[in-house]
Amino acid sequence: MKKSLLALAALSAIAGVAQAQSSVTVYGILDVGYIGGNSRVSDSSKGSAGGYNNGVAKGTVSQFGQGAEQTNRLGFKGVEDLGGGTSAFFTAEFALAPQDQTLSGNTNGGLTNRQTFVGLKKAGIGQTAIGLQYTPVFNAAAATDVGQLNNMAGNVVYASSTAVTSGNANSNNVAFTNRTANTLSVKTDSFGGFTGSAIYTLNNKNTTETGYTTSATTGGNTNASGWGLGADFTYKKFYAAAAYQALKQLTVSTTDTSLWTNAQANGATTAGGAAVGTTTINGYASNVQDNQFYAAATYDFGILKAYAQYVNRKATSTISSNYYLKRQAEQIGVRSYITPTIEAWASAGLGRYTSYGANQPTANFNGWQLGSNYYLSKRTNLYAIYGQTMTSNAAAGSTTTSAALNNYAVGVRHTF
Image 1 (cartoon, helix red, strand yellow):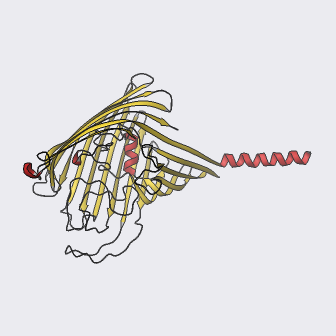
Image 2 (cartoon, rainbow, N blue to C red):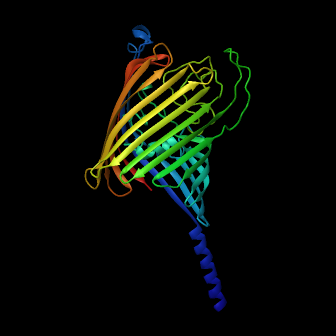
Image 3 (cartoon, one colour):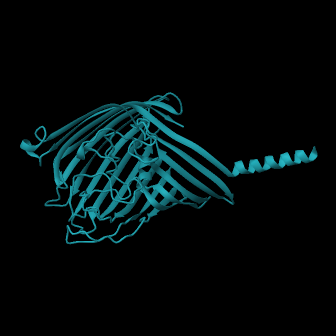
């Protein structure tokens, strides 16, 4: 009997140590509702004779959709105590598509990978991780965006839209790159209110390519690489963050004519991303140096929180620096709890696209957004969001367009 009690005590102790050292958390977001919107794009290059509806393309969306306030996801986080203030951690997060009939969405061969990394942390110093991770610019924006990076039109910094496409008016990921694959990251602990971070992303392969004859420049490397730096500062109710990242995509392509690419935008190792106009650079438009900068500050006045944001992105041909497309945007906003259960926000901003060419042709744009949450509980809320973006009739890249987009949604979001 005494031996049995000792054995039971030993097993209990072992189990207790294991639980203290390792823990795994399952988390996620499910966001569904009604999404509507209208878009209008005028393209003067088509002309009244050859263009549809006198050169104007119109679109309307009305659907029970998903992800208006936040992208749906399922994730797993784990931490193991290694002793001496050192711990190991991991995150594996995947996109969910409740609107589609398959778990990962009809266009994907498997679960869409949002984040997957493993790292080590030392208390009082910082942490490092390797894998598919968010960029410093994305992390800074996530902490300082008045709309909390929702997927609706009107936010000129995040520049997203749900279910509505409208050429230059709004496109996903045009403001900055969200995540990079094959990435080493480091982040410091807070020292006097300051924290710092950095990433270095390597190309997945480096292969000399030959046989391209459509241009005087031939060959090239399959290469996607880059680096990024970030810093933030907290003092009482004031918070500021800034980040810079330089990403390079050298994959040679004779079919992709878009200068504006997202180097590893979705964790890919090949060229891709949202286009702003189309710009052919000797048939090698994927040879892009993509530099992105973000700065923002917030101040909590108690009754409301004020936001100010600035983003700057320039994609330049690595073959000739004379060929480029640049996007800048500034935005201000406020967010406040009107009652203990009703939260509201408002934002307004403006910006411009500037491209190569005579007199640096510019397309100006502006946008605004209103939104509100009604919290039924800590984890469940109803929401209503309306946003609008307008782009001027001016050249950016090789097309001349005038575009307008409004996007609205009502839905329910549950976090777990």
